[in-house]
Image 1 (cartoon, one colour):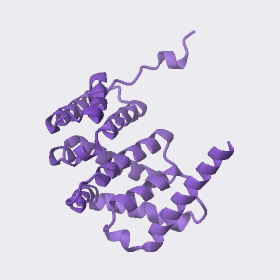
Image 2 (tube, helix red, strand yellow):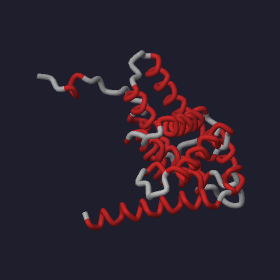
Image 3 (cartoon, rainbow, N blue to C red):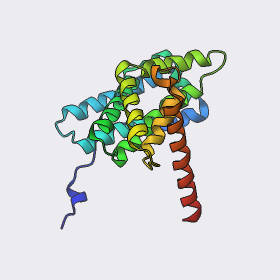
Image 4 (tube, rainbow, N blue to C red):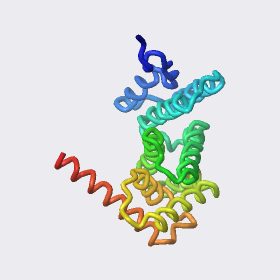
Length: 224
């Protein structure tokens, strides 16, 4: 008798083995050019578009595809993401749009994100954070500003501020939602200078929640 796992079709692959091999090798030899990475990103998007047009793009398949792409981009040597051809590539815009969609779903549902959405949220934020933190001197601030400018659209800033307002006003007790930590990372690492960043109270609340959450996780690991 077949189980449900046996009858459920697997999600199509967005990232071929050759891509992962090239990315891993680049972390050692630093031999992938900007053109190589852009070609690779084009192929990721092509596979994603094929999946969407197949008519079999369930929510699970869609999230699997987004997470697979995010995993691959997260492995790219961070400083290479700062090259304008890569930083403004449609694939980075695609990942940014995923951030917008995740924030919108989180706020509109007034519930926690599911585990996979939580993972995707963190991974995409880390892609931009890693790039920003790898920005070389003397152009570090200019490069960080380029990343802020990509993220800081009116729609995105509105969603972030709305979510922070909800946390501060409606969740006065410690919230163990890991997405609050990701939101804190996004806000403090990438959105400094954004219009709502003047509020020390809001930002401090995010930082306090992050510290408390990671302290609890650390204690549970030590006592577990």
